[in-house]
Image (cartoon, rainbow, N blue to C red; front, side, top):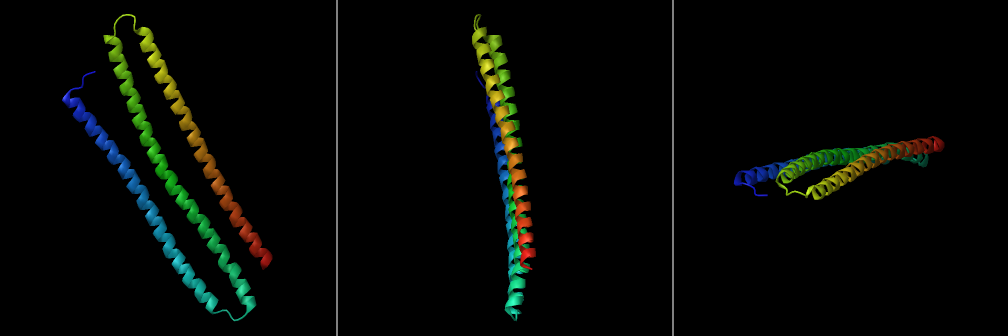
Length: 182
């Protein structure tokens, strides 16, 4: 198929816009991750300072033992919340990338179908079998892509559920340990 200069320019423009969208998504995800890390660092610094002040005011071993449990639980809860936040930011960015890829795949499929339709109109007699086989192959590839997309989404949902369950379990374990120590 021959492409006119206008078609090539339009295709290049569309590819550039797509590349810019990918770059924009990557930058947005990085900004959210950096913001999350800065907040976590500030909180960790403040908590460390408060913990150091509390340790400095300890007068005996009983106060130290009580303080240990008091400091451990919030730290674990904050670490768990931080890990979940990091996962959420990464997951949200990945979902946005997936949406963009799905749009690109749909557009590519549309172009293939349009190209095949043009090919069929100009195809010599007797080539229907080859065109049908090509269309069948494209349909099989699209079905496989759809299945892989569904599996990836299910995996992401399972990972999210497992992360939440692990965070809940870790927090509950620390609370039980703190109550037993008290």
